[in-house]
Length: 108
Length: 115
Image 1 (cartoon, each protein chain N blue to C red):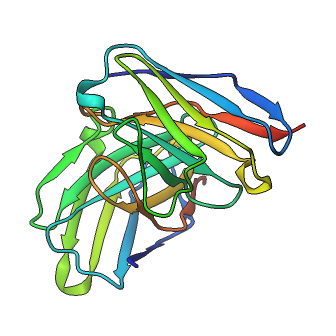
Image 2: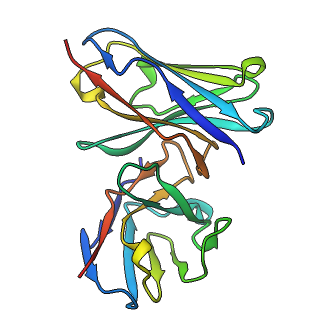
Image 3: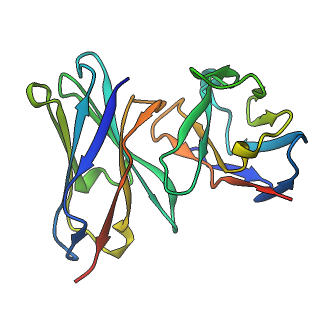
């Protein structure tokens, strides 16, 4: 089973700033099968990015993903108030598909 | 836009079976994978397993001995059964469309294991 770790646990920034969230896998993720989700309180997770860098339908271009192998990054440029939430990475290259513990993006 | 809705008891007694149903609206179930996931404070987000519209299944090895999924496309529903539950199974349970990535989710339902 691939274990995902995310850092930092909490990131405190101001609207308009740039956020960089990291996800590290315990072994190489097959075929770039890495996704990112956003979750707000009381809501289900929302798919942001799959295939490391492909934005899901309706996701603004201030969200971007990058990385390869075991190290991946979600970047949010020009933070909007609605971007402050919890973010998870997920691998889906092999079963079981696992999620990281999450990074909380908090308003500074 | 496909919509999913979980339903089932909010409380289950220890050692009993948790049963949930997901109803799919505004879309066909055919030729899609459908998944169950759960989220708890202790274990975070966890993929439980998936079922194809034809009935093929894959389960998380950590739960495989206790999980069964079924699908009824005529009713636009798929279901989850988890046997021999303990307090560790207390979580918000989600159904979702997809077998690997999950672009459409239900709102989630809290299931508490307690006597």
